[in-house]
Amino acid sequence: MAGKRALNIVKMKKMKSEGVPLSMLTAYDYPSAQLAEEAGVDMILVGDSLGNVVLGYDSTIPVTIDDMVYHTRAVARGAEHTFIVADLPFMTYHGSLDETLRNVRRLMQEGHAHAVKMEGGAEIAGTVKRIVEAGVPVLGHIGLTPQSVNQIGGYRVQGKDEADAKRLMNDAKALEEAGAFAVVLELVTEEAAAEISKALSIPTIGIGAGRHCDGQVLVYHDVLKYTSSYRDKRFVKTYADVGSLAREGIAQYVKEVKERSFPAEEHVFSVQGTHKPSTSLYGNEKEKVNSR
Ligand code: KIV
Image (cartoon, rainbow, N blue to C red; front, top):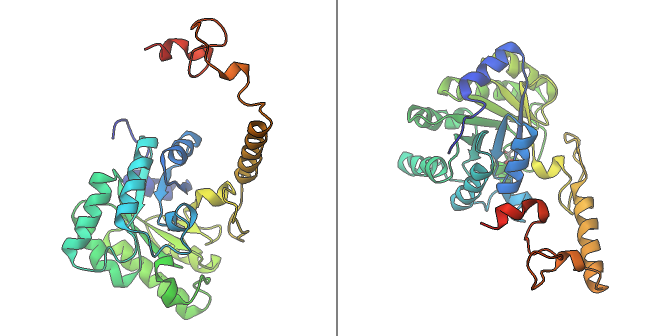
């Protein structure tokens, strides 16, 4: 894509060493990517949470590589200067290496991602290593890994006892050793996440993993309360109630159509071009642009 990107994986590691936190937000389409970039996020994640928050599934499992490529490409068009990570969805990196690399290639070449994210720890470290060797930055993801929700038995906090915290630490180290440039820690106790963040030289990016991670990631629709099925989650802070604003705006539109107060005189085109009401599509200030 055109333009200069603000961030790369070398700078991310430097940010960790300097104690500068990384901000990451999910986005799934052109407008959400534009808004995220304009607001100054360091990284955009085209997460397979796409399945839950955009496509209406009840988990990430139905999301396909085609879905991810399509949405990543839209995000890349909207955020040309931001580092974009795309999720490899369910079962797209557990078959042959050829098949895995084909899926990675699609996210990078067709989707225009700058990196891929994969769920799993030591058990996928070999695959992570091969992808990194192919020149592709990999973001690891451990803790609660939603693609394995049926195996984990629900969306539970991870690292609650010593053995589990140790397992997470081993997984994080295996990913670092395999060449991952950072690791997402999802729904992990603050204590375990702090230990892992201290032990790794690469950044940790937390979601529901407390205050000591090197960065934070949240889901766009959670930050903006942008869905009518929104449920409060302890680890989420909502920064704007876009859902309510959207609902009110749409209800007002419906009301005005019903009572025939929209369209009003200023919204119509007349035969007499330059006289009011205007023939310009976007209002008078854009008259020149629209005469092209
Ligand atoms: O899919 C996603 O949005 C994610 C984040 C929750 C980290 O994996």
